[in-house]
Length: 188
Image 1 (cartoon, rainbow, N blue to C red):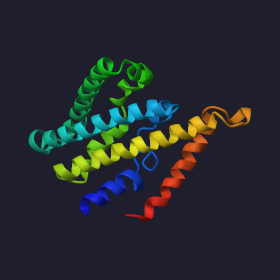
Image 2 (tube, rainbow, N blue to C red):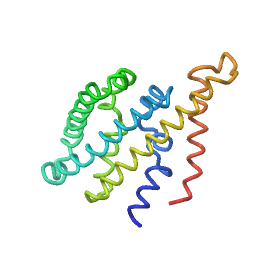
Image 3 (cartoon, rainbow, N blue to C red):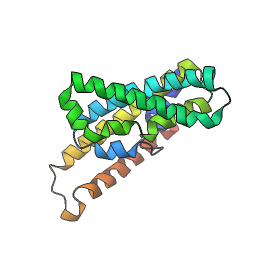
């Protein structure tokens, strides 16, 4: 039951993008097409989950109480994982690699990835809870990204006043989507 609460909370109630406002850069930058959003979501899911596992192990077996090194070490781990994902995507899916463009290396500085690694340590989760928390958070990030991309694709087909076209309607839509996710706050 404890793991189910972590999953529901991470995906819906405390969605990393729509409730905690972490990872806004890729959320706004890559969410113009659903296919690109799915690719970014998969990349972030992989990096966030693996990074949380590695940072958990480093925190508990190497860093211990050396808190001042935590952020630096965590960023280095995330950067190495992003480089690995970038190399793999370049070989496996060049079209997705091109579509993600600059936003793929920006996963390194995505505050959501670093934030979840640090939150898992602060919440004193065990390894299993850390994996579930980070994977569910990444799924919540992906869900928000894909929903927003679908809405943006749909908005391109609508007759929108000139002053609202582009980023203004995107930000308004993101705000409404965030309010919709607030409705889940009574679940947990």
